[in-house]
Image 1: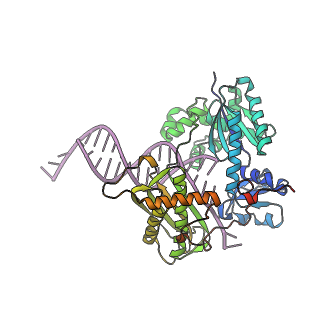
Image 2 (image 1 turned 90 degrees about the vertical axis):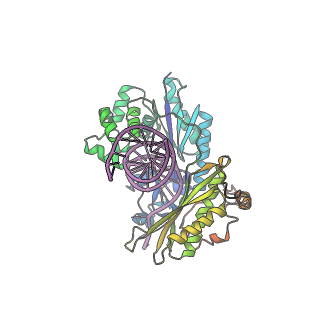
Image 3 (image 1 turned 180 degrees about the vertical axis):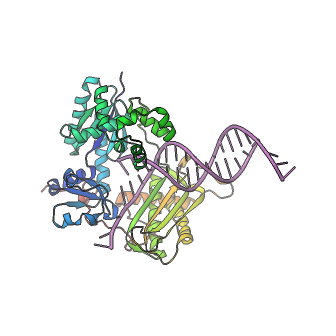
Length: 421
DNA sequence: TCTGGGGTCCTAGGACCC
DNA sequence: TCTGGGGTCCTAGGACCC
């Protein structure tokens, strides 16, 4: 039996989510912006055709917006997360095995599908997902994960109508690799792309023709695996169960400049609380918390960056304990006189709740703050996020980011559910 | 005026031990 | 004062991903 991997990838995912509910967004070019309405992170096909690049800042496309040639949305992760899980549920219903790879992508194990039925199977999956969720999906199918990625890109680029492409012969493989620029191969980033081009390697095919010694010499084990996968040898298997996260962070740019210790403290304790919530939801505790604050590198004013990492005697996921460390740490790194633009909290050294080593020299971690955290989770789950927060987190008004045009939480918040009248 | 956020994996190098 | 080699663990930083 041959091994077959599929890669299902939602087209222009965030824009497609917005278009489910916003009829007016269906007929004109649309983009979705990053947090804080900073830059473009998703584009409709029409927006791509206009020449709008991924990652351009809002102010560079404001002309189009003023002239009403382009519509934009602030990002709405509650919506995208919910639509994503619907798409993934469909894939789980339709496919033998699924690995959710990102919010808009999943690898499929299609080895049990007979070779001659792969293409039709892909088309069927695509149609059903379109029908059930209204999200357009492209599917690439090939003998390795890396080649399924290549096939997917090829489907999007050259077979838009059907949206499915199978690499099922040596001839097809050669043709597709010839037409795949090296820098668009999964795992080849900017640095490696440049290096390869300097060595006259411009396509994926040329990469596979390099001698193995060259790969070993200039790339890590990751590059070697990619090399073999592109030649058709499967090195990456499907992983269906996702491990717990090994680090959790929460960082944000501020909506305006912040220069007081108090505002930074409000922001960082809010971020700390988000990290603690995420820790509890995956039943982990953290050994250390890092925080940083920084000015805006894009302006010409004096720049400042500082960070600190603090360890816990006993791993914790209590909001209060993490906040206390953060407040103490901030006092160490804060310097008056700068315009701060961004800050972040990161918890690392995560361990499962049930594997915590006690510290002989300290009493069992304060059970009270654990109980308070749990209670807050319950209340916030029932009445909506941030129903209860700690006073130290303040009112957010001085630092919270901009989200000028966020769509309603159509599918995850009772008040926002569309009504049919 | 206005430029995102959250991850993973790998490697090199230092500290430490025997 | 000189002097070896092998191993582990941890961390910082790089590269990449979506």
